Image (tube, rainbow, N blue to C red; front, top):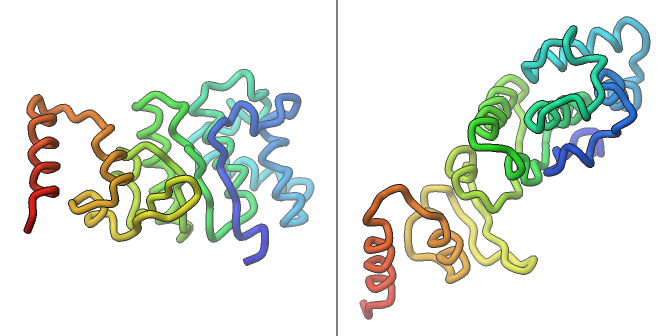
Length: 193
């Protein structure tokens, strides 16, 4: 797969965006590099991408990254990735630095873009709520090795590899009896069959 068809959205948008470039320039760069766009067509595409990530072009095109919130910066990272017209996007902890409400907005945007553009994503995340919300298939890795993989529904149902169980048990649940339930499931999993 050619480079332009695979793009990445980085975890830390603060460090992934050039602080000296205006938002329009950041989004324009891959359009120039991959698409050879210039002039009016380039400006039109930059504006269209800002619209797609739900940021008003007139308001944001001339801003510097430091003038944006974390969620807005992450949206710019998404637009920059989309500018290459990829088929596959690696989302590296794209919501981990964001508060829950902003993170949910980013996930909804990514789902909308996936439907509209027929995109495939690979999420790198430790956030199991994100996995539940967006994944179709899950791969659990420990120290660079795949320890378990499968459909999302199967991955959230026992039995599990011990590391998968550790990940699942480390997420607090709102159910006040969650600990009792977890301990009961562990006893059941360890019981001879």
